[in-house]
Image (cartoon, rainbow, N blue to C red; front, side, top):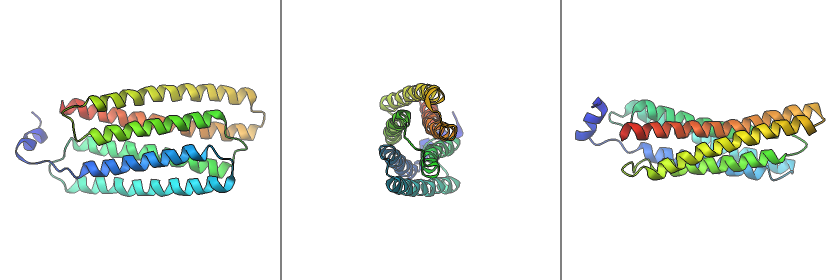
Length: 215
């Protein structure tokens, strides 16, 4: 039996990590929803406003992530492996970083259009982040991990769908976008959107590892 598990038998584990992870999951969902809304408007003024709000959530999430690391350095008994806490915090931070990165590129590049693939990927990002939120909220209840497993499976399915949207989108852009500069912009934005779903799958993988270790 691992030393951490032996200690957990006699010493209560510190539960303060769960509210912090829940808070970050909420920020990620809110940023994803704003990104989706951004891609449904062609008003440059509104695009900038959406990015400002997304950036605020990204900043709030950064603060929570730093707090998780600080708590990790001062906590003796953790609810699950310290390395997994660090990986979970980092991968969640990556998701909102890519959401913010996509929004920032949209604001800076000012593409002439928002292709359907942008909206489709942002829809999938919203779905993936909501599944992350479900899984994170259930982490404190590992006696019945079925709900977590279901969300992790769904995140993997969403990532596969995002891959399809990305590849079909790239094909469509090269076949139909005649403006080379706009092609470069659209390809870069699409790639950043797709990477957000990749990072969501990374979160799912960390959560699955935690479940296996605590089984």
